[in-house]
Image 1 (cartoon, rainbow, N blue to C red):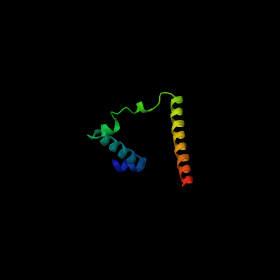
Image 2 (image 1 turned 180 degrees about the vertical axis):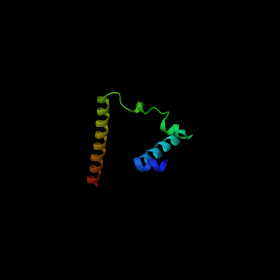
Image 3 (image 1 turned 60 degrees about the vertical axis):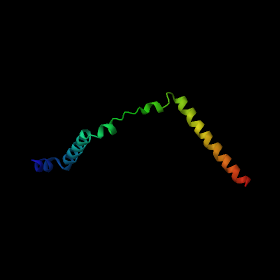
Image 4 (image 1 turned 30 degrees about the vertical axis):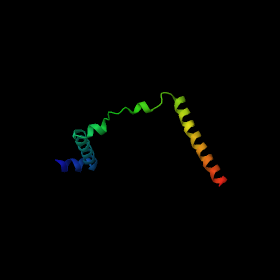
Length: 78
């Protein structure tokens, strides 16, 4: 039967069957629900608004520029 399917439908059927079976094994293993459906809520780290995200990003940029300028200034003074 399998030779008939591969002969008429090609190797794609074999690849899809292998993928489906490996996905099924992943779902049924004991440790996979933790990795597939984590209990941690990562949405709390995402800002609620675009304005807040933009403000946070500009603050990080400003801090990086300040530390770079300070480092260059310290090097020049030496």
